[in-house]
Amino acid sequence: MALELELISPFDVAKDIALAVQEYTLLSAQSLANFFRRPLYMGDMLQQADLIGVGSLPIVILTGLSVGALLALNAASTLQRFGGVTLIGQLVSLGMVTELGPLITGLMVAGRNASGMASELGSMIVTEQIDAMRALGTDPTKKLITPRVGATAFMLFFLTIIADLLGLIGGYGVAHLLFGVDTNQYWTSIWQILVFRDVFTGLIKPVLFGFIIATVGCYYGMSTKGGTQGVGRSTTQAVVAASVLILIVDFFVTKLIFAIFGYR
Amino acid sequence: MPAPTLPSENPAAAVVSPSGYAIEFDNVSIAFDEKVVLDGISFQLAHGETKAIFGVAGSGKSTLLKLAIGLLRPDSGRIFVLGEEITHMPERELFELRRRVGIVFQESALFDSLKVYENVAFRLMEERISAEEIERRVREVLRFVELERTYDMRPSELSGGMRRRVAIARAIITEPEVLLYDSPTGGLDPVTSNTIVELIMKQRDVYKTSALMVTHRLQDAFTMATHQFDQTTNQMVALPKGQHCEVPMSFLILRDARVIFDGDGHQLATSRDDYIREYIS
Image (tube, rainbow over all chains, first blue to last red; front, side, top):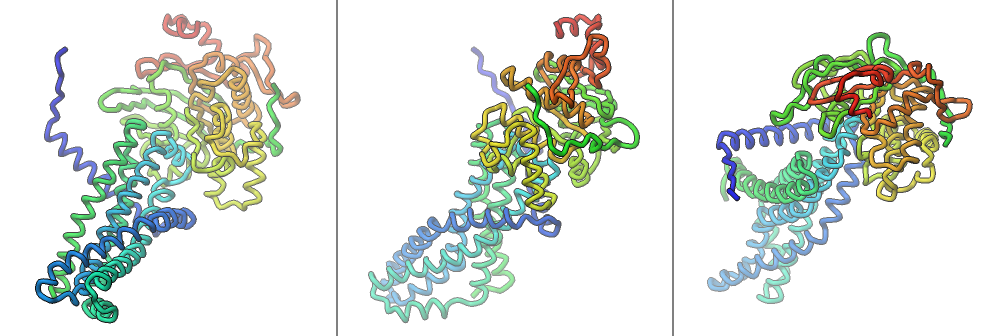
């Protein structure tokens, strides 16, 4: 049996990518515009906030604690050489608040919720539930997407604060128990090293990451094709795309904030 | 089996558009990935009429229904629903128009995260109607489809026939002027199919609702053409042979993306077209 290979034109691939970017941009813009149009589905938003926020709490607590502890452990091994173990608090504080807290929380929530959104909406597409909703006179972007976008951005903000705090506690555990850093010194150094720019960076990122997670999850869900196999494909693609986009946006946001506020 | 009574039966509730047809397709074509699904389709659905649409699998019957409610846009041609052209109507305006049109999907398309009463009440909840009024109307319409006991159940707990009847309840709760049925009896046993045919007939004869009904089952359409719903006995009754043309029932057959027949039962039965004769035999 002859093996038939179908050659895909690079022009078609480029066209598909451009179309996907256009559709994603439109969906994202619409999800934001819906915040200013009635009805605003507050009940659905609260339900999603519970699912995303409370549901993600255990995983955020665990990762926050471990990342803070690991950060302290790695920092200590270097600082010990220069006799600067007392600076652990500063390194953990800067690392968690500006970078690792938002990033790790974003990636964890992306893994858990972008996939959940893509599979839920994808299943609704293949079983014609989205068509049914449109046929019943309800805008699915308003009823399904906007509440998810609002809830994810809102809850990721607070989840990141929790992750930051637990990271600092994890770092304190390592610094105090393993390296004998004084409690007062650790927490004072944490407080003293942080400036407005660090806190602003650490709090603006989760809002952006939350927006990315929800819009990417919903985009892949809403563009599902090909039955249950398509749902599986959308789920995987949503997690990969959301994670990659978070990392890329993280770099550019950090660079932009440095450009605006200047380096230390 | 007699169909249950809807307590607030009000035949006058069926609002008729001041002019034109309930639905009109004018030279409509649509293709997916270069495969032409419908090619130059034209037909009209009069107010109060039910039109059964036949065709082999993949002949574009479901696509036609989705075009009629604006879920798909045609590549060319024009579509009118209740006197308004929907061909290029913005989605936001379509949402308003769709409140006057009900649709029953092939696989019911019930929201599986919601309970039966939430599914049926979906449109009423969106319109912010009071909870008491919603409960009264949901119970009423569930009684109409003989499923009041499923009020608190999840769609996953229902059989295929029950899901189809809940979908009908969801479609008719707002007393739409036009109903679109996509294979409402597909895959169901004869008894359940009969109950559903009777419900559709009641919508036609009591509420004078215009309807497009996609079906593979010729016998369902012929039952609708040869029977009438009798409000006094609350069940369908067979019409004498000479009166079959008195019910507002017509047939449309699709083949190779085109309409090959559009007419009433008598014209269908006397058609000389070989394909049609073979199809209905």
